[in-house]
Length: 357
Image (cartoon, rainbow, N blue to C red):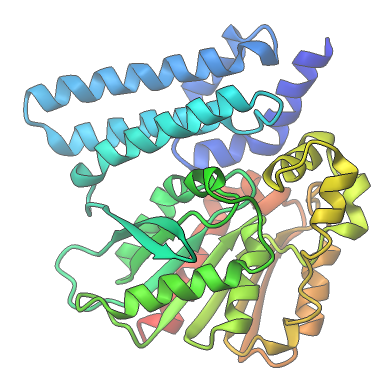
């Protein structure tokens, strides 16, 4: 097996469950593996499946089956998302895939159930892009704010959003510094929490959601951004870490090369050592004790991207949290993606417990 095949094997080992949990079809993944002779084929093969779903959407739109069209457009978006993820050494493909993904979700947004309202929040001379979705028929629901990770973005949270809607919560998923659309405005910044607070400031102006109580969830690298945001903004009543990141520096040279390259890329650097120095600011030691809301920590004991010890450290140091609920899966890999069918619903339940009761 050549190195290019090894890359695909590594991606499948860490991300196949994530892909299926986020909406890719198992049969499509089999087709991808069958057609890819190496990593160099990945982008073309995966985007071709995305194009196929877009064609299905066009057919549904011609017959006014808009709900089905919305699902197909969202699926097309997700294939473009997974076509470009990890393409840190091909910024041309990463940018093309990101832009195509955004365009497809924008097309899907009005046809989704519930529909997605695109919102761009001006802040600090930048624009924070996000989507607000509200349970159909709800009156002033509380809102869960959803944050992606290193290479996960607002569009990827659609299925988890639906879990929140079924439990009476609105959702606002957004891209912050270094993520998705915002990557083209600014790279990773140490003050992500200011962007979260700007989102809450905006949501408080809405008359169609409950502005008195907010929850937050962060996936992977978002498992650093979410608790940091909760520590700095007391309007957050509940915080979920879908995988916990306490700091980066201690395991920087031990992480997978592809992941390290990703952090370096999103920090706006090309040299890993420069990336490491740029990201030494990623550390919760200055604020873990400031977390006062209810805290949910999910982590896979067998996570080989972010060590399990990171979750234990936050659990130990968040001494002022209202409560700490832990969900540590002995067989779980990164973000427990291999156990997506049993680990996602409890996170939605936790948010609902603290926002809707």
